[in-house]
Image 1 (cartoon, rainbow, N blue to C red):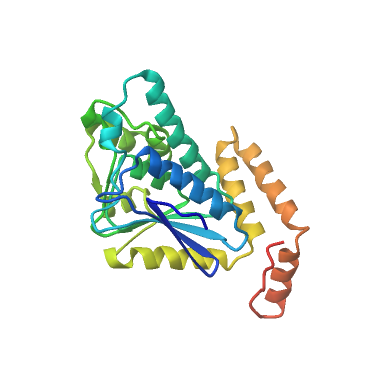
Image 2: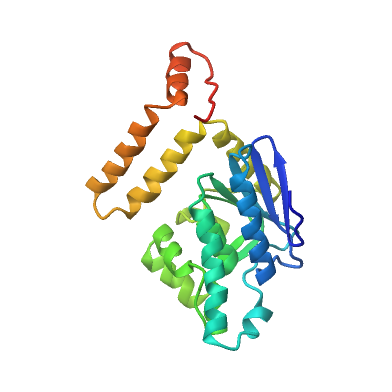
Amino acid sequence: MAEYQNVRIAIEGRVATLTIDHPPVNAFNRQTLQELDAALDELLENPEVKAIVIAGAGQYAFVAGADINEIAAIKSREEAEEMLRLGHRVFGKIERSPKPVIAAIHAACLGGGLEMAMACHFRIAGDRARLGQPEINLGIIPGWGGTQRLPRLVGKTKALEMILTGDPITAQEAYRIGLVNKVVPGNAVLKTARDLARKIASKGAVAVQAGMTAVSEGLEAPTLEEGLEVELAQFLRLTETEDMREGVTAFLEKRQPKFQDR
């Protein structure tokens, strides 16, 4: 594995944990984003890795947002666009990953941190975590997808409230509005995320990818009928796989399936 300064990778079984480690609050500067981008490529290309957990180091924050010093140093529209497109590329890579990515949110998850978490497929939050888009307090708006992914997850009205007030919400509120999948004690966040990753990794990778594709592409389809065609295509693709034959045979033989991811 490559060596990084602000990102750490650990692989256990078929699950990789990618930790953002940029003290004191894991803010996203250019280097951290570039290292995250490279680390994701490494894990996506590793055939032994079937699921990825993204965590934040330290006790204060999952990721507290973009590096304010780098924002303050922007001198032109072109520099701003370059920074924004870097975040779009990295977070888009997470969202389009054929392997499920789980955000383990143990503490503050703000600004770019929430934008990254929303690009993940699942979010596990600690009971004392706070989540928000405070960019309005800097005279700007979320620029790494927050204005687009947040309303798709929680609805337009709640998204506008969070974006235009900048007020963070509790983990419990985030769960109530569907922003996170589960709230657990802070010291159990990483274990819960890894357990979920291991459970998904125990399934056939081909079916997991088909399910992710059917949901994501189906939601982008203009009509339900077109979405159903996406589902149909993914299901039919699975009928030609060894994993389907193994899964059905194992069920009939009353044993656990041994998927080969093909």
